[in-house]
Amino acid sequence: MNRSTLLRGLGLAVLLAVAVATPFLLDPRGYAIRVVCLALLFAAMAQCWNIVAGLANQVSLGHAAFFGIGAYTSTLLLIHFGLSPWLGMLVGAVLGGIAAFLISLPTMRLKGHYFALATLAFGEVMRVIANSWSGLTGGPVGISVPFAPPSFAMMQFKETRPYYWLMLAALVVVTLVFVAIRRSKLGYRLRAIKENADAAEVIGVDTTRTKITAAVISGMLTACLGTLYAQFQFFFDPDTVFGVASISVRMAMIAIVGGIGTAAGPILGAFFVIPLEEFANDLFSSRAAGLSQLVFGVLLIGVILIEPRGFMALGSRIRRLFGKGGRP
Amino acid sequence: MSQPLLQVSDISKRFGGLRALSGVSLTVAAGEIVGLIGPNGAGKTTLFSTLVGLHRPDSGAIRLNGKDLVGLKPHRIAAAGMVKTFQNVALFLDFSVLDNVLTGGLLHLSVTEARDLARRCLEQVGIAGIADKLARDLSFPERARVEVARALCTQPKVLLLDEAMAALNHVEMDAFIALLRQLRGEGLTLVIVEHHMRAIMSLCDRIVVLNFGQLIATGTPAEVSRDPAVIQAYLGSSAA
Ligand SMILES: Nc1ncnc2c1ncn2[C@@H]1O[C@H](COP(=O)(O)OP(=O)(O)OP(=O)(O)O)[C@@H](O)[C@H]1O
Ligand SMILES: [Mg+2]
Image (cartoon, rainbow over all chains, first blue to last red; front, side, top):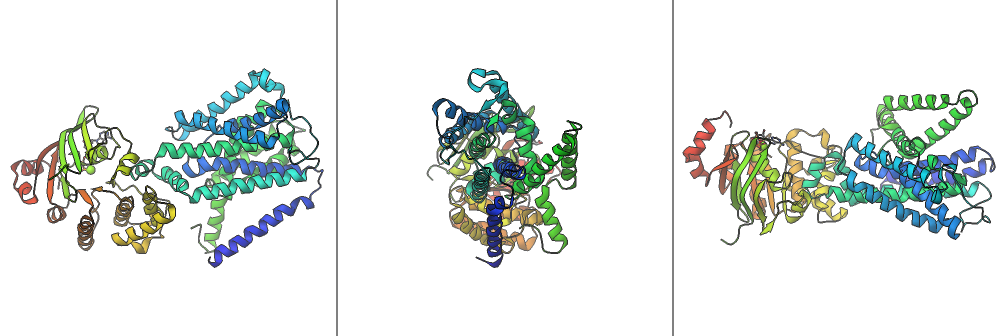
């Protein structure tokens, strides 16, 4: 191990320690810790999205489908069978994976906007189904997670702190998965497809299978995060968990703003976008409901115009400015 | 001679009204170096693309070791042992040189094994010194050699090279010719498209000539260069 990897490992360890200790600095019943929880969760979600979009450049705008499947699966299993959300999460992951497989079959050959639109439509179909199949989902009025005595086994806690650690653990796991994939055969193949699909095929990359594998992993992990969201919020409806703006576009936006295809990008993006959004809501919503969205949108467009590859690229640009070279 | 390694029988390919290949048949024996020549637009690249599965022929058969390849996707054909390089050079531009080559090795190997093989392939092609450079920062001749190394790293039986020497100077070309001879010595079978007659003449056991999608001659370099149909084809166009 050389010095720079050692320093990097040390830096990451310190960062993680700070992250673990952060809840002790925040009011456990306050608003800030909930915002940080959401930022962690959305960072993890954007990281899931990053697996397919970041590595293979298949920009999905339908990831809410998997998220909502996860949220509804564990919640319904809890309501009807008293099943622990941990197990419900696994069932949701399987269903999310199946959904990702099924949607991949017809869409995998599509590129760019066509892929984005097809996945967007898929997410919308799921939202419409959830809204109209009231017998199962409770329909547009939404659904509540039944209260249980707080315990780890039931993924329910009295305070916000345990949720924070849960979200942090999820983010760490998903990020490790992303990094492991990027270094693996799958990661090389995904990136090769992004670079030149024909050349990748000719030297032996099964492009269809590679993309589907990544999509299934991404869909499964996203569904798991849907369960965490449900347990954290206690109440949700189809328009929230299957929403285009609330979930799908936000996941994409966060990863893009932070730096698509990088491990740190979604994290930077989430800790920029989510607090900013909350702040904008706070500032404007009492006076003009739509205004916060507008301000928020304008800011995001600004960021993307300045550096379309996100904060990560901005960082390496600055580093190069100081003569230290960019990312290898 | 037993069954040929590669057997192309009567393949045709149309692009709309254009007959890019009409009834092309040829065989390549194991360990042979075959040159594929012909004026611009003759169908050489189309033939290569069809062989590796990027185009599906309208009719005809392609057999590698007796196995029918028509209809297989390119990655299956690569797994069967036939890969090509691209005339316009198709590297993964945001990959390092090493990662480009390594990706070829993943066809049969783990990442670690592929990395080791990739280093050997780079050495073999004479570009070990640029392993850590980004592909997009390379000159065109360097890129072409990286692509050859990447193809080699898939451990092919048959390698199809589409003008891989196009941008080389004389010294580089001599080194490249020596490399191809050495690879053949190691059991590789080569089909090469080249406009450099010197390279073709000195390297190839046999030459196949295409013109307007049809095979017009086949034979040793000496035979082909005397063939009236070939002379006519080249004089009739401004190529070469
Ligand atoms: N994808 C395609 N769609 C339509 N026409 C094509 C396509 N590919 C090739 N052609 C046409 O087929 C003919 C053969 O082209 P090809 O590229 O195979 O020739 P070539 O022998 O490789 O020529 P060169 O020496 O210039 O590389 C040309 O007329 C070309 O314009
Ligand atoms: Mg050509």
